[in-house]
Length: 251
Image 1: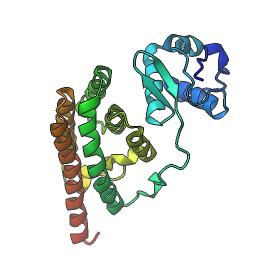
Image 2 (image 1 turned 135 degrees about the horizontal axis):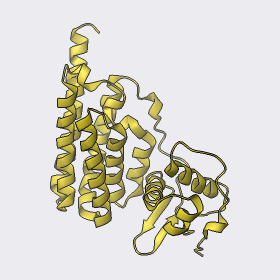
Image 3 (image 1 turned 30 degrees about the vertical axis):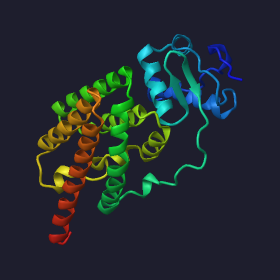
């Protein structure tokens, strides 16, 4: 039987965290791991979490987003957010093993097939709230590009939100395991390898993200799949050419 926990049911947070959202996430995941919250249980309301942790609604929603991305919770619109059974076996993908250019190329090949389909499903299934979150993250990436920042964290969140919009948590599980390794420039200096201007490179990547977003916004699955395939294939091709250049130089 599904039960609902109040804010008083959960033990208080015990330590400081790097961010407010992280503190909320660790508090709730700790309660799940200790058995205080079980699969099927409904999380406290946003207002209750806000009051308990002394945080804003934006922080609570960011924390819930992280819980969903990590496969701890699922939101049923109009009902609430519930703890779900999290896979214990995982998929045995070790993000720390992705260290060479060839490793990143191999990961891009996997992502092309997986994320192109995820984009198709996201365009078909996304909610208005999810597309609004995508718009916010895309805006954050655009502002970072304008400042010359690589915007790796926002890029990861963009792809995770697309995975969440599929309604299939296994897409989210895989991308969550990989973390920032899904972004090639988090592992290798893409502009430097390709003898490219960093600002030009980031602007090009940003336009590719915009194409994906616009297709999901207008609920065009085929265009979303094509845009995601183009984006990831372009990343693979840029990295492949850079690798060839390194090899030809004897690096």
